[in-house]
Length: 466
Image 1 (tube, helix red, strand yellow):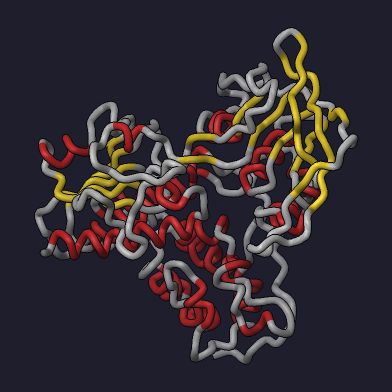
Image 2 (tube, rainbow, N blue to C red):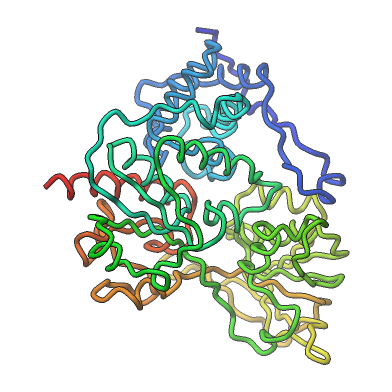
């Protein structure tokens, strides 16, 4: 093995210049070269107690896959990663490694942690580039002759389907939209996650044996009970995510030019509004205001900028320190010319002849920490002002669609509309129904959803083997 590289900082990730990338939808970061990957991999100390593994929701054997990179064995590194993570090219790009696997990294004590996510992406991209990637896939060696239905083809559903297929089950994914991938295709923009990567990962899953039925709205086309009673699926995993947008319930939200972030990003990503060869309508005028501080808000703002909006603002009621968005996404947004109105909250959206022409905002300040340690935003009387806006995008969170609950008698949900499921197994109030991901937790991360899908797959195997 190569000598340890004791450089305190991560190997810098190459990326497009901000003044160029804010005018295109190409991927912002361009990935490590082999030399960069080797240089970064040698920063890993290969700790015996492996704190990074404990920080990973799917428990990738991180030190050993990185060790394989230092030895030049990239295919072995990929094999190690995919023992527990079936979507490494996706996770390497969109997972918040800084708050998960990289957070406990020993190298972070006196510098920056090892760039685990960047190395995972490097390994996955190396394999994606192979012509045989989508069809050279190990097939399950055991068949159990039992059918399992997966409702939803987002991260949790894909992870559950992959594991259950490997166990020998006959697995079918039912997806409501015309393309598989869930939030990976409708929610995350091309410049953060190229859709070709998602398509290749899903094609590889299909080659392994997973069937995918598109345009199947479970609860409308067919009910979960019908899948079980009439079509012979002995277990059902629900991974339908949280796609119902939340609004602020302030005056003016019904004006033309007001979007939920879900609708805006679906038009841009899945319906390709960014591509002139598509006729997907999307209007936002010259001044776009995006309300919210999470990754979805950053995605919407940065997409609007690329669609030639002259001025794009993020409006967030807390300070930057409290922003839930990844630090990298906030940094990229600032580089691309997005303006931040922090400690600011909308009070109403203004309009003329049915169209947005401004947004009234009020300044906020943070209270002293409460019993839970959080500082809450409170209004500053008399601080109202008008923000120029020809369109407003609301990105303040999402909830699960109520369709599954309303059409599945006996399925328990909580006050937020999330399905109640055992946190360790995903089993619900109906024994043959399991659930995981955002439909259980509310909007969270791709890797946490995948972790829930994997737990549910193991529990389904146990349930069907009873």
